[in-house]
Image 1: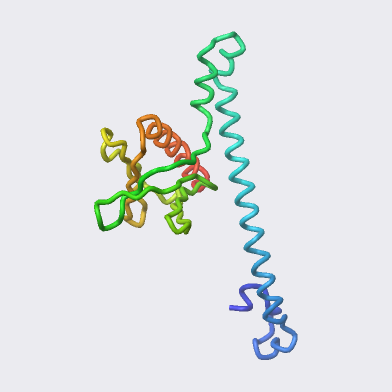
Image 2: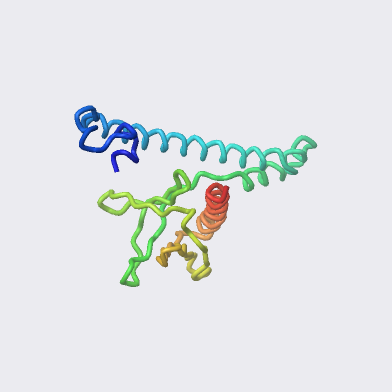
Length: 181
């Protein structure tokens, strides 16, 4: 295993290379640097994708009509751009039919939420297969993951429900496009 990570020189048996092999601290530092580099690259690529999507929505039809003086074009531009999602939702408990208030936000194409103790949990939006409306009259929607888990959320108002539903659909499409390429 150490040879596959690039920590042992090629061609030498593990017993002969043990005297010239880097220390475990150096190996751990090298692994940490590789992981840290992957995270930075992933974050950078996600930001570039978000900028491209937002630029597309800004430069499409409503932007052209805005230059002509159409007053409704500004509202359409704001509706088309990817919004920052953050706020309060009620999450359904796994076994009990109870909803608990959670602070929810989207960061790096992951839906994150904090429980009362402040522990953060996340749902990778690329792993979400479908998004369904559970009950529109109660402003409830569900995220179904590939692992078979269902996350049910309830919004506090019709406007919040619409904002979360549209925003999550946009982020879900971005996540699937990013990981498909």
